[in-house]
Image (tube, rainbow, N blue to C red; front, top):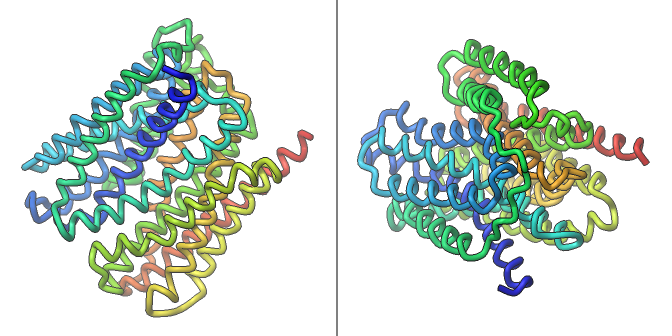
Length: 449
């Protein structure tokens, strides 16, 4: 196969695989009411349709990134796509709550492998300047996938059936699996020592899983949160003493990379919280159908895509730090508008924040990714990608949890419009923290010049 063609196909595999992980999560949001009616689910079972995916994703992300370094991207990509295809098909034909929840959990495991492996593939196959362009496209996929999933979910739910989306997922994953078998090379196994850090792997899976469950599923958060923090603290102790750690501590000991990872968590926390309440506001207050709710995200989707295309040139001229700070500022302005501008329709309340979020994410995501993998050796690119995606996933879970708690518990029985306003205040606080983190990243870079 010609080198140019192989690289184009690798880019397609990486981008489409990452798109699947984002698309699958949002596809469900506009379909939950129909899924509940079709499968006769209780409210608790319905919540686990979403939570099972996020729990598995958050639990296995660290381990998955490291396994790609140890056993090669080709093998891990094929395992992930096989898991994703089979579990999507099972979800599509499911007739019971337990079957659906289990298949969604397996989907989350597949997504946990796909996310870091797809980014590591780009690092393996591309060099500058094409690498910066590929990373910009990769980084924009998370926001695009969320928006496209909401639109597609609304269309399918309104005109066909919620199961069609999972059939499509299975077909795309199968096609990518076949393409991976024929395209990817075996050379990606970069670790000579392939012994698994068993204790570290168990601690990362259990600790991350408990952390996700504590904020996204547990009725009593405190005991699960404490257990998660104790186990994750134990993970750091373990990783100091092993030769082949699942979490190479030197990757987060680097201040620049750690700040980039933290800024990703704040960005995704703000964005996911907004998506959640935006969707609910459109349906509960403005009485939009699932289809119209999905279409309402189209301006943000287009904006994010267009800005993401421009980012590589902007980074080349202005540096990652300046572009990241600009994007963070746009996200903060989105929440300023949502908090302080009053109105009773989509154009007044939501359109401007959506456009600003599209600009902000388009500007910020690629620089964060660049900074998070900057200077990482090829044999550790999977681990670095896993860490970034762990912060991405946990940020989304925490953002929704914080904004929901703020909106519901402090609203004192207000209607949803009141809950929305309180949630946007919480989102503004998160966005301010994102800007402060971006300022630290800027001065950390300036101090090293």
